[in-house]
Length: 189
Length: 189
Image (cartoon, rainbow over all chains, first blue to last red; front, side, top):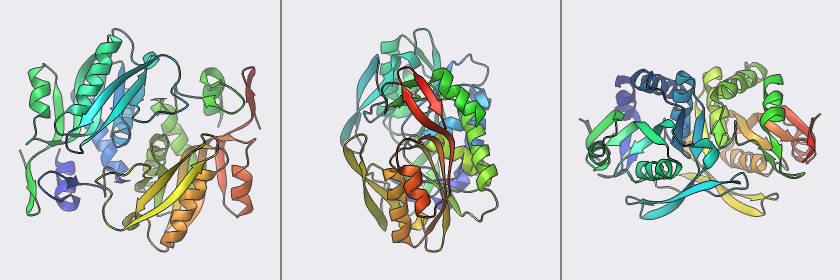
């Protein structure tokens, strides 16, 4: 997606070979007009496949996933990283380990919002090793639901997430696939 | 806002006199069409006042604030509750205590996204005692910026937040003001 790649080249900054800072338009400040275009691009790619809900992981996926859900006419479900008093009732949990951050967190969703037989579209801001996506796949499996598509805003294509997910048969659609990055610059696949 | 009040009456559930569960359309599952209408209503009320950015607090404010920012043609800034590797550079911090939850957290924003002389619009999902809003006011004060308006999706009008903010001269616009709630029902002001 050209508009997104231009934003990454113009505003993104590779702090090192692993961390890409895109906080001016994606995950701290948000360019909502760009996120609307991102959502419409996902809807164009994934439309007409019988999805029942869009799901994302709090919190940087929420803006692009909101516009995707709107363009597809579907509800959005936010998988929660933090416990909260609103998380009541019958809950599904899974542990997600972040290899890049060296931390782990518990991902939670209410069973009401991920039901048996559903076909959901996962939208997230980044894909690296794929641990967050595998967490959502685990929750869907517990629920008896299917993840029928995975839309990613920025993929670190030098990590294994995309390949691991495709080998399991998932349709992964990334709008910008970063081949390599360093202080010298960013290259796309 | 009629459409929102109807959603609250139809889908909301007062667990007790203090906790209103609206997880089917606002903070776990999100009705994005309703959030778009919410954003357009905020834009109608707050438009033409020279705002430079929309700000919100992660994570339940992000969806309504995204649609508000889009309708106003402004960037959105997400004040962060969690530390992260993307939070680098010159940061502003403040401590927010949640009286209802009995917890506290640190709210952080990069100084680049809240600059001296700016006039920002705060959008959040809930207003109760106003602690989160006061946290944003504190960050704005540190930055030398002004919070020129506060838009709230659901207000617990039986708590003091609205009054405290208005007494300080802030324009608080809440789309649904809950006067009282219990297992028996929800009443609006």
